[in-house]
Image 1 (cartoon, helix red, strand yellow):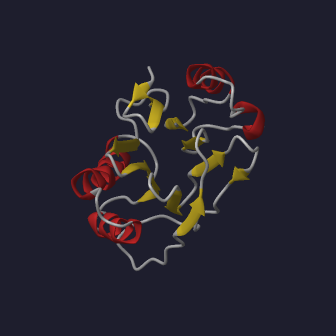
Image 2 (cartoon, rainbow, N blue to C red; image 1 turned 60 degrees about the horizontal axis):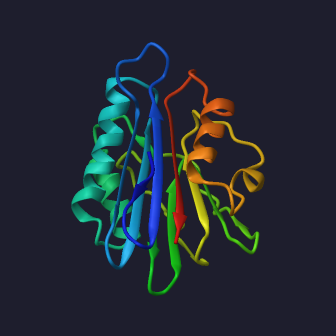
Length: 198
C-alpha cells in the first residue's frame, strides 16, 4: 500500500524473510517532516534472529535521532553494533527546500534515483559492513528534481533494467508488483522501498 507521507513524498515498502526463517534480518525506518524525508535500510549479516537484532539496532537509532546529519547517524549506528552481528547500512535524506539528497552506505545495499529528465543517479557504497569497528564513510550529496523516483533494496532482490522500471509515468504500485514478481528470491531476506518525490 502506498504511504502518502505529506505533499512532498509518497512511499511503498515491501519486506519478506528468507524461506524457513521466523525473523527477517532486514529492518527499515522512514519518516517525513516538513523539512525532509529520511530513510534507513539495514541488512543484518546472515539471517534469522541475530541478523534481525543487528538491523533493528540501526533503525532504532535513526528513529530516535532522525534530525541529526547523516555522518553523525552512521557513527551512532556503527557504535550500536558493538557486540552484535554487524549490518550493511544505507541512510539517505531528501532536504525539500534545497532539493538535495544526502546519501551514505556501507555494504551491499543498492540505491537509485531516477529523474523525469531521465538522469539515473547511483551512488557507490563503501564495501564492508558496520560492526562497531572504526569505519570510513563516503557521504555524498546530489541535487534532485521534483517528480523523481527513488528505489533502495537489500541483496535478497536482484533487479536489472532500473531505468525501465522507474519510468516517470509508471505508478509505484505497478513497480512494486513487477519487483515482487520478477526480482524477489526466497534465498535471502529481501526488502525494497520505492518512492515518488512530489
